[in-house]
Image 1 (cartoon, rainbow, N blue to C red):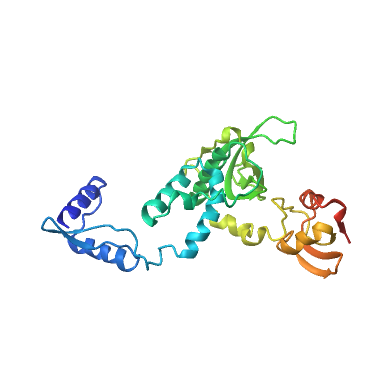
Image 2: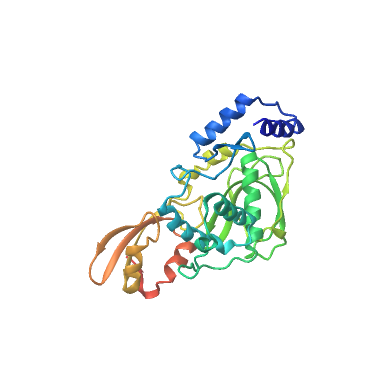
Amino acid sequence: MSELIEELNDQLAEEGLALVAKRSVESTLATMVNDFGMNIPSQRISGEHRYVWQGMKDDSPYYPTDEDRETLPILFSTLNTQADLSALSWLKDRLTEDYGFTDDEMENSDYYTTAHAEVVNLEKVLQLCGRLIACMRKGQLVTFTYKKTDQNKPPKQHTVAPVHIRMYESRYYLYAFIRGSDGTLKPKMSLFTIDQIRNYTVQLVPLEDYSFDHVALVKKVKLKSYFNHVIGVWHPEDQAPKIVKLRLTGVAKSYVKHRKLHPTQKIVHHDDTSVTVEIHVYVSHELDYLLGRFREMCVRV
């Protein structure tokens, strides 16, 4: 115990923090054992009592159950599509060292795979997403150069208050308020495709120069309900969502019975040959793309 306290206090002193006494350390160890389920028994080694880390207790609420061990590999089959991310390597190491998972348990490709569009430079996109989220938490503006793919205009620089990131069909989008030439945030939220940010790079605006209240912006746009009637990412300011009624046949009928076109979907009629559903959404090109896959097997009624 004395060696532990000495080492701990050396570290605290280097950080300029207050030192701790034996009673504080013992209290913390008791909390780790009793509240967090850590297995840290006191053992007599070479004539001295020492605390020995032995992982998590089997009955700990933080210890994976059999069901956890069976279902976590399903999650990793999805996460392994981003195998180059350092955070994924760190998580795997923790599961291996602290909970005894094996590489075979986390590698499930012989039994389960996922299919999705491959994102170009995915690691850079996700790293930028992580940086933007960090700026959201701090209320920090960012500046970047952006080029819209559907316009023959030169790239434009924007300084924005990032509010939210949404992934739709393997592409990542940023919702943000643009800072205008007068130095204030524009009243309407804008949408950016993250992979169109030049070099996947943003510059941070010093907090002492300008900061924003992310919680206030989230409330302003009513983010909790913002996507209630959105198909993908497009949220028009000038129209209300509409009830769209669809009749589906063939394989499209089975599709909508087992996978909703949208969270608002309701089945209003079904028989042996067709099913009729209603969805409450913004009518847009995203709806056309969604329904286009069914061709003649889907008609609006």
